[in-house]
Length: 81
Image (cartoon, rainbow, N blue to C red; front, top):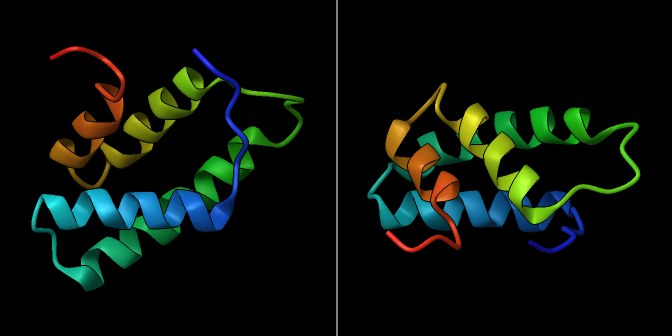
């Protein structure tokens, strides 16, 4: 469990990369990434720091609204499956 340094661009790019792995259309993945990044940045306001585990958990929750498979990738990140 590490401390996550949050960057909008890195977060957006990571969502796009994982969506591409799943074969999600690029236009769809852009829309999903844009919406989720906005939600994550709003969620982190007022928090002095968040762990990578907290971030991935929150990402999974937000991504589940759009694509369960994409959410699962973030939920199970850094875990043996």
